[in-house]
Image 1 (cartoon, rainbow, N blue to C red):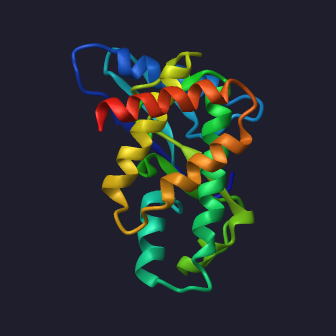
Image 2 (image 1 turned 45 degrees about the horizontal axis):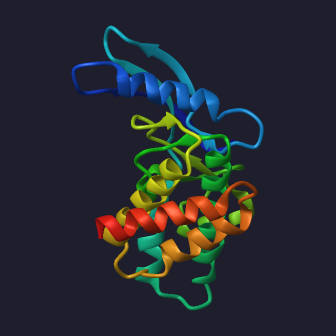
Length: 203
């Protein structure tokens, strides 16, 4: 991946190391094959309850990118939101097919990072999606779970987060969800059924 990288020290709160262990395990499990990109893990210190992660100084949160695009409201550029929504849906599908449950999915847990630095401060560089990697972060609530219910819950958490963060983009989750379903190869009917059941129960 491109972009300037620093070392980021993240300290976990709480009385045990469960979140720290889950984060570290999920990052390692999601680094192989076609799995979504995650921040590289360099060191786990269970005594100090810290993990040392790769940090990108030239990335942008997916959430911030969305809001910036909505504020600019340039019709010629708005299709890029659909491009990234499709990619996020695909990444989530890949993660779930590895039975990796994130547990705290949000547009604030996805980074846009340049593959090759454009050497410009212009925000237009994020429109060049072919040069952008999507990097998933914050696996503190993650677990390994193959059940359709766990995957449906993951989707519902993302939907709630999007509805709170992006009230001016009401179609966003629907586009991500359609991409997720179109890329899924395994038990998608059961996952969708569980998602709808959870949504009906909790909303």
